[in-house]
Image (cartoon, helix red, strand yellow):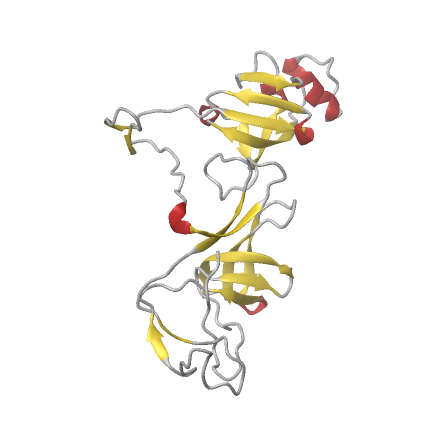
Length: 256
């Protein structure tokens, strides 16, 4: 997400010192490359609950951080906010267009630009500065949600639904299709702040549930449950009922 922030001092532009709910922040403890979003602040303990953006191959995490260790690097502006310029160097009184640096204005409209990681394209390229108005939010299906049929045009209310997942194990050496994944209890989401399945999400699956007769109905596209067990150093000769309660990590490739 890209936007402009307002400096706290017109003569010395610098990031805002006061951290507020909804800010994008960096931590003086975790390193300058990690960016997080403040979902809420606890004034009693002077802490902020931050969801950190995944960096490279590291998973997404959330934590409670002391506010004095956080530095605001971006803040969303909404219509009605009063702002002034902060992109001029000290000593400059006007910008290139002749506008007064001390002049103040009110936000009457905003435009959001996105950097998108293209999961379905080879190499996962990043498309920069994509206008948010050109993309559509993928709304998860919920019970009692109203839905409109794309071709027939009828309006209905959701009473139940099945989600089919295609997941890969061990870097893609094994791959299977799981039916009605939202109705089984053997699939766990690594990070509890996610509610829904989406491509790229890390999940954990019990080995016993993947075996024939297990609680998960799956179709193996590449490899098999035995191959996954071997790669996880589990004795494949054991009977399913006496398998240890071991779980394996998987990545969701597709959601249908």
